[in-house]
Length: 81
Image: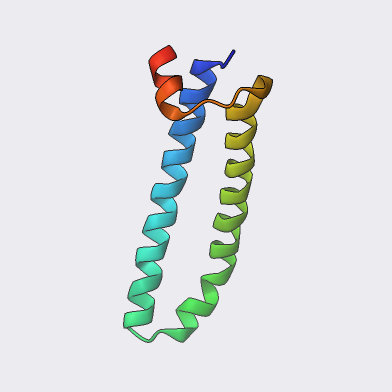
């Protein structure tokens, strides 16, 4: 059985991360428009950290949703909750 409290806590973190990633991508787009190569080079470390966190969150999401060998859709999970 899925732990819905744990799932909600995870998705709050997940959404927060993707908002941060979107903000970073918008900043990067502004650097590109401004042709600011130096700022782009300096942003590589932050981008790599965001990508690593994304990968980690995707692994957590997979483990959380596949726990107990349950293959449920989001709709099924919502209906059960």
